[in-house]
Length: 378
Ligand code: SF4
Image 1 (cartoon, helix red, strand yellow):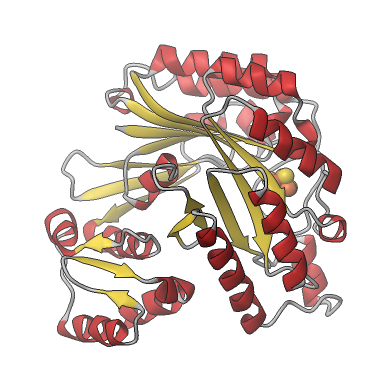
Image 2 (image 1 turned 120 degrees about the horizontal axis):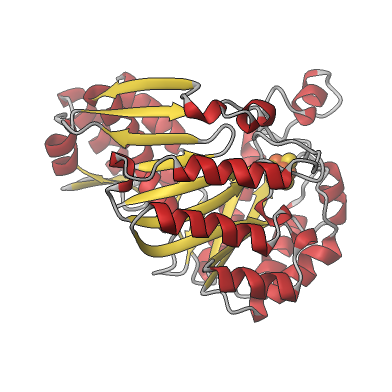
């Protein structure tokens, strides 16, 4: 079973923190859809179309800048190219694009999971992040999603913003929970060097929050969502039991996936099962429209040791963790005595659970990156 990712590279304006690939001109939307369909169809009758597709994910950029008709065309090309056994079709959207009719039309195309980039409901923070939507649009959209027929909707939230107070974060969580989402993705704001925010920080115009402040925000998010029955299953992802995202879990478990669109990544195991290939398209709409997707822009072959390290890093960021059997059978690695000793030490501190599966506790997930770094460099 595999997954498909579609990168829709259009945005109304550049959010100050964002380093995803996007363009703000809307001029080439239909030519892009036509080219995307060509890229999808190019996989027909290849080994990539031999596995049943279980998940489809429309990400970006802003997929909700496409019309429901264009989404339908894309899904039709997919169904004519791949055998499908779909469990989840996710569509990212921004609050300022959503109307009742649009949601209804998307539902008819086969989308069953709506992902809403709310980020905050605080007007000052939305302004600071240079989001295209207003606080009112965020609330209106949450109301529409709450009343919609989507089986699952998920809300994206950002914490750790410079100037964000605990009160403001609590208010965001209260408002979001009022609409009863099944899933929440909460990300700590990352300051990327090539973004407007990164430049402002570099020039000393904005001071990022202290690590302690971010840790307190993380605690508030985790505790508030847990009290509402929305449980952490990965460092940044929370869901009601049974509503965890399948598509992202596939990435964490090294399932095969294909990415389409400019900048999209793909991963596929070699038939030997002893290596995997990762490749990506060039991040440039103009060359994409000229067919650059025909040859991979960047490609690397990952042997088992590199894949094992990656699987460990991804697996330990999830509540489910990773089993030692999987590491041995699929990746032919086991923990060294020093790593085992380290894990037991972390267990005594209440950060790790050992046994057949190695899992991080809530306390451990909070410092997952430190634990992983220690474990891989010990
Ligand atoms: S809408 Fe999303 S992809 Fe577009 S600039 Fe903002 S954060 Fe980035």
